[in-house]
Image (cartoon, rainbow, N blue to C red; front, side):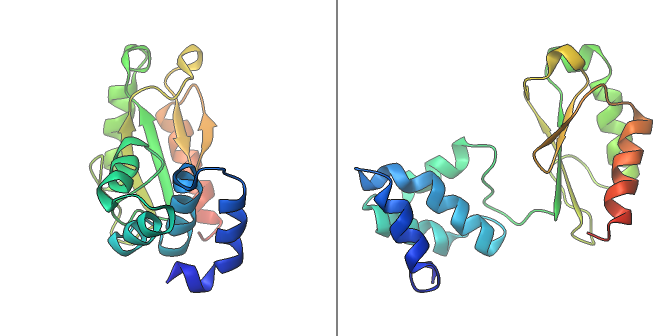
Length: 158
């Protein structure tokens, strides 16, 4: 349970907010850091800590794209397929990424290394197509750039 393992960190998080329910986001990050995604148990515990229903916490998990209600790979690859990126080749990039990784968007490679997602707008329209890899932006992405990113991540052994 998070309360026992992270008692001091939880207390520090709650101390930053005059209203407990405002601590939902940082507590969910703690859950995700511990379990790799927002587990049902973690969601219930956060709800209990801040005094809201688990349904309200699930709503937060569902709303924010950086929270996951299922396991994801060690590396998260999000390719923007919004209109500006699509006009500059995002559809072809997504198809290339899916072939390269052997998964469809929304899936994780069998080895658990990569999860591929498409997202609407990551705020890099001026350098489309764009993707985000583990919260790092990569702009002007070509299939060759994508392949190099994957090779670099694979070489790191992570």
